[in-house]
Amino acid sequence: MVDSLQKKAKNIRKNIVEMVYQASSGHPGGSLSVADILTALYFSELRINNVSDANRDRMVLSKGHCSPALYATLSEKGFIPEEDLKSFRKTTSYLQGHPDMKKISGVDMTSGSLGQGLSVANGMALAGKLDNKDYRVYCVMGDGEIQEGQVWEAAMTSSHYKLDNLCVIVDNNNLQIDGKISDVMTPYPIDKKFESFGFKTLVIDGHNFDEILNAFQIARQTKGMPTAIIAKTIKGKGVSYMENQAGWHGKAPNEEEYKMAIEELTK
Image (cartoon, rainbow, N blue to C red):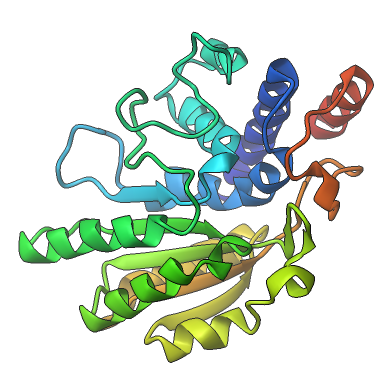
Protein backbone atom coordinates (compact mmCIF):
# COMPACT_ATOMS: atom_id res chain seq x y z
CA MET A 1 0.00 0.00 0.00
CA VAL A 2 2.68 2.52 1.01
CA ASP A 3 4.79 1.86 -2.11
CA SER A 4 1.73 2.40 -4.29
CA LEU A 5 0.89 5.66 -2.52
CA GLN A 6 4.46 6.91 -2.86
CA LYS A 7 4.40 6.29 -6.62
CA LYS A 8 1.10 8.12 -6.99
CA ALA A 9 2.35 11.03 -4.88
CA LYS A 10 5.45 11.34 -7.06
CA ASN A 11 3.34 11.52 -10.23
CA ILE A 12 1.03 14.04 -8.58
CA ARG A 13 4.03 16.21 -7.71
CA LYS A 14 5.30 16.04 -11.29
CA ASN A 15 1.90 17.19 -12.56
CA ILE A 16 1.81 20.02 -10.00
CA VAL A 17 5.11 21.35 -11.34
CA GLU A 18 3.97 20.82 -14.94
CA MET A 19 0.72 22.73 -14.38
CA VAL A 20 2.28 25.73 -12.66
CA TYR A 21 5.05 25.90 -15.26
CA GLN A 22 2.64 25.75 -18.20
CA ALA A 23 0.44 28.44 -16.62
CA SER A 24 3.40 30.61 -15.60
CA SER A 25 1.49 31.15 -12.35
CA GLY A 26 0.14 29.26 -9.39
CA HIS A 27 1.11 28.07 -5.93
CA PRO A 28 3.66 25.23 -6.06
CA GLY A 29 5.00 25.35 -2.47
CA GLY A 30 1.83 24.52 -0.57
CA SER A 31 0.63 22.20 -3.33
CA LEU A 32 3.76 20.08 -2.99
CA SER A 33 3.54 20.04 0.81
CA VAL A 34 -0.03 18.73 0.82
CA ALA A 35 0.44 16.15 -1.95
CA ASP A 36 1.00 13.17 0.35
CA ILE A 37 -2.05 14.03 2.45
CA LEU A 38 -4.30 14.24 -0.61
CA THR A 39 -2.80 11.02 -1.99
CA ALA A 40 -3.62 9.16 1.22
CA LEU A 41 -7.12 10.63 1.27
CA TYR A 42 -8.09 9.80 -2.30
CA PHE A 43 -6.36 6.43 -2.64
CA SER A 44 -6.95 4.94 0.79
CA GLU A 45 -9.35 6.89 3.00
CA LEU A 46 -12.18 8.50 1.05
CA ARG A 47 -15.20 6.59 -0.21
CA ILE A 48 -15.53 8.66 -3.35
CA ASN A 49 -15.34 6.37 -6.36
CA ASN A 50 -18.72 7.67 -7.55
CA VAL A 51 -18.99 11.45 -7.22
CA SER A 52 -22.76 11.37 -7.78
CA ASP A 53 -23.32 9.07 -4.79
CA ALA A 54 -25.04 11.04 -2.01
CA ASN A 55 -23.40 8.74 0.54
CA ARG A 56 -19.85 9.42 -0.64
CA ASP A 57 -17.33 11.01 1.71
CA ARG A 58 -16.69 14.74 1.25
CA MET A 59 -13.39 16.63 1.00
CA VAL A 60 -13.11 20.41 1.29
CA LEU A 61 -9.78 21.91 0.20
CA SER A 62 -10.07 25.07 2.28
CA LYS A 63 -6.64 26.25 1.09
CA GLY A 64 -8.06 26.52 -2.40
CA HIS A 65 -5.05 28.34 -3.87
CA CYS A 66 -3.31 24.95 -3.76
CA SER A 67 -5.67 23.71 -6.46
CA PRO A 68 -2.77 22.21 -8.49
CA ALA A 69 -2.47 19.50 -5.83
CA LEU A 70 -6.20 18.79 -5.93
CA TYR A 71 -6.41 18.76 -9.73
CA ALA A 72 -3.37 16.50 -10.05
CA THR A 73 -4.86 14.13 -7.46
CA LEU A 74 -8.27 14.09 -9.16
CA SER A 75 -6.51 13.36 -12.45
CA GLU A 76 -4.60 10.48 -10.87
CA LYS A 77 -7.96 9.24 -9.58
CA GLY A 78 -9.45 9.40 -13.08
CA PHE A 79 -11.87 12.31 -12.53
CA ILE A 80 -9.92 14.76 -14.74
CA PRO A 81 -8.18 13.80 -18.03
CA GLU A 82 -4.44 14.23 -17.54
CA GLU A 83 -4.11 16.15 -20.80
CA ASP A 84 -6.47 18.82 -19.40
CA LEU A 85 -4.02 19.68 -16.62
CA LYS A 86 -1.90 21.71 -19.05
CA SER A 87 -4.84 24.09 -19.48
CA PHE A 88 -4.57 25.13 -15.80
CA ARG A 89 -5.33 28.83 -15.30
CA LYS A 90 -5.90 29.44 -19.02
CA THR A 91 -8.83 31.80 -19.66
CA THR A 92 -10.83 29.11 -21.46
CA SER A 93 -10.07 26.33 -18.95
CA TYR A 94 -12.40 24.85 -16.36
CA LEU A 95 -9.32 24.32 -14.16
CA GLN A 96 -9.25 27.75 -12.59
CA GLY A 97 -6.75 29.03 -10.05
CA HIS A 98 -9.23 28.07 -7.34
CA PRO A 99 -11.46 24.97 -7.55
CA ASP A 100 -15.05 25.44 -8.75
CA MET A 101 -17.53 22.75 -7.70
CA LYS A 102 -19.87 23.68 -10.57
CA LYS A 103 -17.25 22.93 -13.21
CA ILE A 104 -15.11 20.09 -11.91
CA SER A 105 -16.25 16.55 -11.16
CA GLY A 106 -15.00 15.51 -7.73
CA VAL A 107 -14.75 18.99 -6.22
CA ASP A 108 -17.13 19.15 -3.25
CA MET A 109 -16.75 22.86 -2.50
CA THR A 110 -15.69 26.00 -4.34
CA SER A 111 -12.90 27.43 -2.20
CA GLY A 112 -10.13 29.97 -2.11
CA SER A 113 -11.37 32.62 0.30
CA LEU A 114 -9.23 31.48 3.20
CA GLY A 115 -10.81 30.62 6.52
CA GLN A 116 -14.19 29.52 5.21
CA GLY A 117 -13.67 25.83 4.51
CA LEU A 118 -14.28 24.54 8.02
CA SER A 119 -17.62 26.34 8.20
CA VAL A 120 -18.71 24.60 5.01
CA ALA A 121 -17.37 21.25 6.20
CA ASN A 122 -19.36 21.70 9.41
CA GLY A 123 -22.53 22.12 7.38
CA MET A 124 -21.82 18.95 5.41
CA ALA A 125 -21.05 16.97 8.56
CA LEU A 126 -24.10 18.28 10.42
CA ALA A 127 -26.33 17.46 7.44
CA GLY A 128 -24.97 13.94 7.50
CA LYS A 129 -25.87 13.63 11.17
CA LEU A 130 -29.38 15.00 10.67
CA ASP A 131 -30.00 12.71 7.68
CA ASN A 132 -28.58 9.66 9.48
CA LYS A 133 -25.93 9.21 6.79
CA ASP A 134 -22.63 7.51 7.51
CA TYR A 135 -20.41 9.58 5.22
CA ARG A 136 -17.39 11.43 6.60
CA VAL A 137 -16.17 14.94 5.87
CA TYR A 138 -12.52 15.97 5.58
CA CYS A 139 -11.31 19.57 5.57
CA VAL A 140 -7.72 20.40 4.54
CA MET A 141 -6.49 23.77 5.78
CA GLY A 142 -3.26 25.74 5.66
CA ASP A 143 -1.43 26.72 8.83
CA GLY A 144 -1.31 30.37 7.76
CA GLU A 145 -5.01 30.10 7.04
CA ILE A 146 -5.85 29.30 10.66
CA GLN A 147 -4.87 32.85 11.56
CA GLU A 148 -8.38 33.69 10.32
CA GLY A 149 -10.88 34.24 13.14
CA GLN A 150 -13.67 32.43 11.32
CA VAL A 151 -11.71 29.19 11.66
CA TRP A 152 -12.07 29.29 15.42
CA GLU A 153 -15.75 30.22 15.32
CA ALA A 154 -16.21 27.20 13.09
CA ALA A 155 -14.12 25.06 15.45
CA MET A 156 -16.51 25.92 18.29
CA THR A 157 -19.38 24.78 16.07
CA SER A 158 -17.65 21.50 15.23
CA SER A 159 -17.24 20.72 18.90
CA HIS A 160 -20.65 22.01 20.02
CA TYR A 161 -22.46 19.66 17.63
CA LYS A 162 -20.09 16.77 18.42
CA LEU A 163 -19.26 16.26 14.74
CA ASP A 164 -17.31 13.03 15.05
CA ASN A 165 -17.82 12.49 11.30
CA LEU A 166 -15.54 15.50 10.68
CA CYS A 167 -11.76 15.40 10.34
CA VAL A 168 -9.66 18.54 9.95
CA ILE A 169 -6.15 18.24 8.52
CA VAL A 170 -3.81 21.22 8.96
CA ASP A 171 -0.98 21.32 6.41
CA ASN A 172 1.60 22.64 8.87
CA ASN A 173 4.54 23.58 6.63
CA ASN A 174 5.28 26.64 8.85
CA LEU A 175 5.40 29.07 5.90
CA GLN A 176 2.97 31.51 4.31
CA ILE A 177 3.36 34.15 1.62
CA ASP A 178 5.16 36.62 3.92
CA GLY A 179 7.41 34.15 5.71
CA LYS A 180 7.25 31.94 8.78
CA ILE A 181 3.80 31.70 10.34
CA SER A 182 5.46 32.04 13.74
CA ASP A 183 6.78 35.46 12.67
CA VAL A 184 3.71 36.75 10.84
CA MET A 185 1.04 35.75 13.40
CA THR A 186 1.83 32.61 15.33
CA PRO A 187 -0.99 30.07 15.77
CA TYR A 188 1.23 27.80 17.88
CA PRO A 189 0.65 25.53 19.71
CA ILE A 190 -1.83 24.44 17.03
CA ASP A 191 -2.60 21.06 18.61
CA LYS A 192 -3.33 22.56 22.01
CA LYS A 193 -5.59 25.19 20.48
CA PHE A 194 -7.74 22.62 18.67
CA GLU A 195 -7.73 20.46 21.79
CA SER A 196 -9.01 23.38 23.85
CA PHE A 197 -11.80 23.85 21.31
CA GLY A 198 -12.97 20.28 21.91
CA PHE A 199 -11.13 18.30 19.22
CA LYS A 200 -9.35 14.96 19.39
CA THR A 201 -5.90 16.14 18.30
CA LEU A 202 -3.06 14.24 16.60
CA VAL A 203 0.36 15.50 15.48
CA ILE A 204 1.99 13.52 12.67
CA ASP A 205 4.63 13.60 9.95
CA GLY A 206 2.59 14.68 6.93
CA HIS A 207 4.97 12.91 4.54
CA ASN A 208 4.90 9.53 6.30
CA PHE A 209 2.09 7.43 4.86
CA ASP A 210 2.05 5.02 7.80
CA GLU A 211 1.46 7.92 10.18
CA ILE A 212 -1.13 9.55 7.92
CA LEU A 213 -3.14 6.34 7.50
CA ASN A 214 -2.95 5.56 11.21
CA ALA A 215 -4.22 9.04 12.06
CA PHE A 216 -7.19 8.58 9.72
CA GLN A 217 -7.97 5.28 11.42
CA ILE A 218 -7.92 6.93 14.86
CA ALA A 219 -10.17 9.71 13.54
CA ARG A 220 -12.71 7.17 12.30
CA GLN A 221 -12.73 5.46 15.69
CA THR A 222 -13.14 8.70 17.67
CA LYS A 223 -16.68 9.27 18.89
CA GLY A 224 -18.39 12.30 20.38
CA MET A 225 -15.93 14.89 19.08
CA PRO A 226 -14.28 16.02 15.82
CA THR A 227 -10.65 15.23 15.05
CA ALA A 228 -7.85 17.62 14.07
CA ILE A 229 -4.71 16.17 12.50
CA ILE A 230 -1.74 18.53 12.58
CA ALA A 231 0.45 17.29 9.73
CA LYS A 232 4.03 18.54 9.90
CA THR A 233 5.10 19.07 6.30
CA ILE A 234 7.76 20.74 4.16
CA LYS A 235 6.75 23.51 1.81
CA GLY A 236 7.89 22.61 -1.70
CA LYS A 237 8.43 18.96 -0.71
CA GLY A 238 10.14 16.92 -3.43
CA VAL A 239 11.84 19.79 -5.26
CA SER A 240 15.10 20.60 -3.46
CA TYR A 241 15.36 24.29 -4.33
CA MET A 242 11.72 24.92 -3.35
CA GLU A 243 11.82 23.15 0.00
CA ASN A 244 11.30 25.42 3.03
CA GLN A 245 11.41 28.53 0.84
CA ALA A 246 8.57 31.01 1.35
CA GLY A 247 9.39 32.58 -2.02
CA TRP A 248 7.89 29.53 -3.74
CA HIS A 249 4.50 30.12 -2.16
CA GLY A 250 3.09 31.63 -5.34
CA LYS A 251 5.76 31.65 -8.04
CA ALA A 252 6.13 29.58 -11.21
CA PRO A 253 9.47 28.02 -12.19
CA ASN A 254 11.27 29.20 -15.30
CA GLU A 255 12.33 26.68 -17.95
CA GLU A 256 15.61 25.77 -16.27
CA GLU A 257 13.97 25.41 -12.86
CA TYR A 258 11.14 23.38 -14.38
CA LYS A 259 13.58 20.91 -15.96
CA MET A 260 15.47 20.58 -12.67
CA ALA A 261 12.25 19.88 -10.77
CA ILE A 262 11.02 17.26 -13.22
CA GLU A 263 14.43 15.57 -13.22
CA GLU A 264 14.42 15.37 -9.41
CA LEU A 265 10.86 14.03 -9.30
CA THR A 266 11.58 11.47 -12.03
CA LYS A 267 14.49 9.87 -10.18
